[in-house]
Length: 277
Image 1 (tube, rainbow, N blue to C red):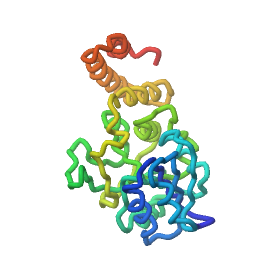
Image 2: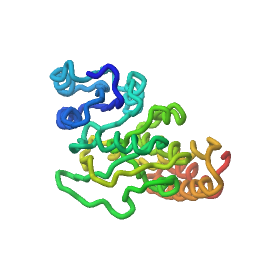
Image 3: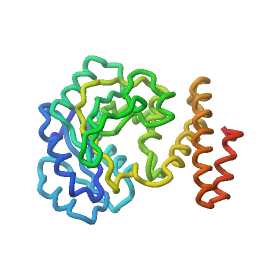
Image 4: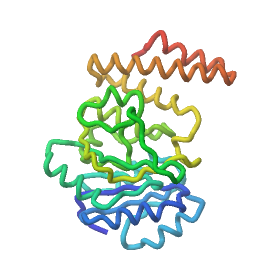
């Protein structure tokens, strides 16, 4: 464990015994060494605690009752000391050179606050190519990020002072908490991109937050929040209102099909007005 790291790496884990070792080992195998690693065991009931016991002395473990991924990451952020912060989801893993590439990028771009790398997608054990709409971008990406999340936590490194400015992950969002944070970031700051794939991102398994039903209601909440923040420029605001109406209409239709008529009426109201924003 490094007492004075430049980079703090944060892994939240809840019942991820199947993949956690690979995630941790991919961090410990990095050629860049000026980092510390904090793993938050968010109340796991599987073999996760025993796996973490094997790493005593080489990483910091925070154990807590299950409270969700936002609170887990936030707890680790508050316990960390690095000027730079990197996240890794416990079902993903890094490829060699990820930390060295991003720390070098920040050294070359001292005014930058956030960057991410390219990634390889694995779905149900098979490599897949992301569609054009999922293509990572650099620069001002707020407007394209409204439709879908274009930043993945496992690919990100950011300066700690950015979180001081924007705030941490919203603990009231059980999912899409990263989408919410990235909207707060991208409405004010450009995002850097190292196109080289340095992350393996796995999906298609049932315990992912992205597999939860009705995710659009959390994205709707995130857009409502950013509209109410007063941070948006006129073009950003117009785009956010447009996407909010689209997502509300889609979600309302889904509620109607499931017989949740009162909920459908609530979300449909945002297709004609965006008050109180």
